[in-house]
Structure formats: C-alpha cells, structure tokens
Length: 272
Length: 109
Image: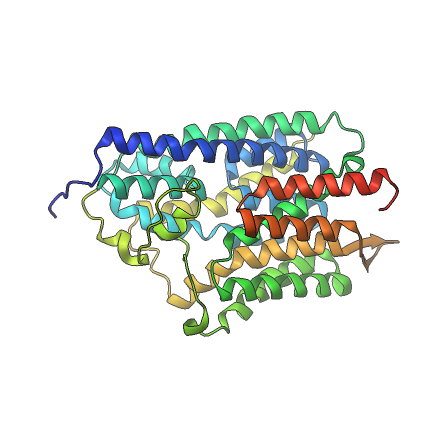
C-alpha cells in the first residue's frame, strides 16, 4: 500500500470543502427548520422533535416519521420503514471504510453516528481531492455544517411552530408532502428509481383507500422497489448509484466540476 | 411536555446506527447480494413517493379514507418540477406554500 499524493494540497482542499459546505449548511438549516415546523404540526413536543434530530439524525427518515405518526402507523411499522429507508447509509459507510480503517474504533463509531447523505457527499469528494482521509474535513462536513445547523434549526422550527395556531391557513400543511416529493426527485437517478417511485406512490394511495394510510405507506414502500427491480439493468440508465462519488457530486455546489466514478472506485482508495 | 416519542426516536436510532456503523467498524460485513443492494437503493424513492401521494390524495372522512383532489396537488407537482429543473428544494417548498396560502386566502381551496 503506497500512499499516493493527492492532486490538491490540504489548504486548497479545505478551502474547497468550506465552499461546498456553505451550501450544505444553508440547506441543513432551512430543511431542519421546516422539519421542526412539520414535527410540531404533527403534535411532536420540542423534546420529541429534538430527540429525533439528535438520535436519528436522518432528514428523510425524520420527515417520514412525522407522516407515519400523523397517519397513526403503529411503531413496528415506523421502525421497519426507518430501517429500510436508512439502509442506504450502508453504502456510504462501505465507501468511506477504506479511507478511515486506520482510525481508532471509538472514533469510527462516533463518525458513524453523524454519517448522513451530506456528510458522505462532502467527505468522499474531499478525500478524493486530497488523496487521503482528513479527520478534520470529515468533522467539518458531518458536524459543523450538518449536525449543528440541523439541530439548531429543528429547535427554532419546533419552537416557532408552536406559536402558529392554524398552520394550514398559511399553507404550511403542504410543506410535508412537497418536501417528500422533492426529496424523492433528488433520489431518482435512473429508470429503476422512477418506476419504484411511481409504483410506490400509486400502491400507497390505492392500498390506503382500501386498508388505511398506515398499511398503504408500508405497501408502497415495500412493493415499489420490487417493481423497480423489474426494469432490466441494461435499461435502467443509472447515472449516480448511491454510495458513489457520482452521487456525492449531486450535493456539490452548482458549478462545481462534475466527476464520475465507478461504485468500486472507493475501494481502490487504500491510501487513507 | 410529551416525551413518549423519545422512545420511538431511540428505536429508530437503534435500527439506523448499524447501517451507518457496520461497514466502518467491521469492513466486509456490508457485502450483501447485489439484488439486496439494488432493492435498498430503491426503497427511498418508493417510501417518499408513497408518503407524498398518500398525504395529498387521501383524506380521512367519518373514520374512513376518501380520495381527495385539491390545490395541494398543484403545490406538490410544482415542487417536483422545480426540484427536477432547478435542483432547489426550497424553491419548490416556497412555491407550494405560497400557492396554497393564496388559494385559501381567496377561498379557492
């Protein structure tokens, strides 16, 4: 294992990281605030909303949990869907593992808790530019620009949400479905995802009308991916599979140079 | 102040942490069959689409579910279009909120 010099030196790589982080921080702040509003609207107390943001710390799953709880879905269903929805982190963690394998196990355990879509996107791009892992760079992406803004914004949103008597009067009840739809679009990178989303939404509505919304959401979430898998790989036109640097680039600031990597590319990064 | 959902948060965290930590702590354990990885990649779009669709298309009336058509559809469709076009979630959310607020202010929804 021969260390390879990265194409960019540390100060330059960190400057680029901060530039990309600014956009992520703004996004985390705004989105965390909206989550706080939605959670409050669904009847979460500030402690409950904050517990989700600190302990779960996964935006899509937290938003989904707001919907599950509001629709009366039983806890086992909430937990099952959360596990499925957050299983994508397995891909992020696997992609980062070769870079961080020399770190103490305790440090890696803490790094894992703050591993999100955004942290992965920022850190994998940073490591690749640098040609090695950078602990401080990881903490910047995972904690400074994501965890802290997300939690502070959640607190602000849930506190302000409690002051609004009728959120629907201001259209705030549409924030949740619009956010879910927008996040869904962000995850579509090929025809399989498109089919999974279309079938998931259709099945969700039809089963909800027949058996209730809790069952409908689970049915859509479980059957949609099966329909997506029916799309032949050759016809999938997959552009940015999760866990690859190509998917990370989708989070990068507008105008950043676009790079594409194979999924296995990260496994060659054995110089971390 | 209610706190029973804190337990739910702990349980959600308990099923989330392994997927974040196992490959970092035990490299190689993530080597699931290809079909399983493909399936997991598709769960996100399917669940989020189901949540969005059910939220705007299904309402509870007298204890049962009914199909709903309303201005909320336009709000969500607008959010989808803006997200796909501009890659800007907040633009989509702002459009949806303003559209619904104005429609309701004028008694159109």
